[in-house]
Length: 323
Image (spheres, rainbow, N blue to C red):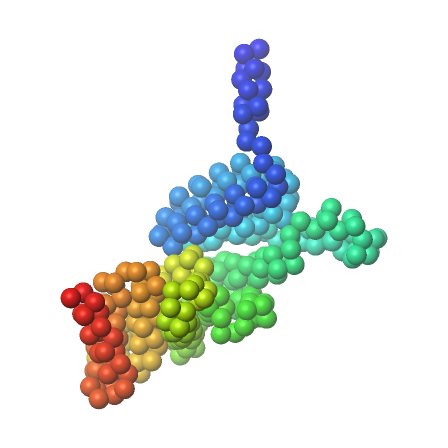
């Protein structure tokens, strides 16, 4: 009797939320888990994401709901990072089937009633943009799984599909698309195709450097009027982690005179990181990476090259700022 009363009380205490509210809550939990993955806190990311899915599952339409896909994707990524590929595969398969079943419902509705019928809202619970994003993420996450399984052909095929979809939506030179180029570089490096892997690493650094170079020009022109649109903070954190990986790879693989061969991608990684830390108002780290870029340019190009002079000017400005 007492047990039944406690269960009733727990049911009564359950937080009531609309599907839209639950969707927002899951997004926030997924963003938190992404940050934990970047920091290497894989187990904590898994624990928090699983708890969120259990808590929000019924409000989102049950375990077969397409709205659970962001949670399944982040769990798959976390398990891949932990090397638990079977668990990652389980969540990716669940995401695939949930997405497939959702799309079949849409097709059935369109066949019966037509796309303009008022019944559309009864079935269509994600936007077209979200559907494209989910499909692209499915391809990209399967690529990471196949890379972990050393199925390189499958990993490349899935990633190519993800890159195509991101390129169609954002453009091939967009910072979102560039994250895929880093993943492509990882695949080629694991395949021992060094030149191809390094080219994709270099492309990633180039895109981020060019992005923030343009961003700060717009900031200067805006003169504090907030006309320059800020990038997504989580994307910047991910890029920072990626660019440091690229930097370390080139520094460790190439020493002394050999480093001239990778001068451009290494310089771009230094400059991109410097601008990211400027964006984050981390003055000491900004100065450190400007100094790295200057030292590399001085060694390879000499003191009279225009890039060397520009970097020295930027370095002097940081000293004036500190004074």
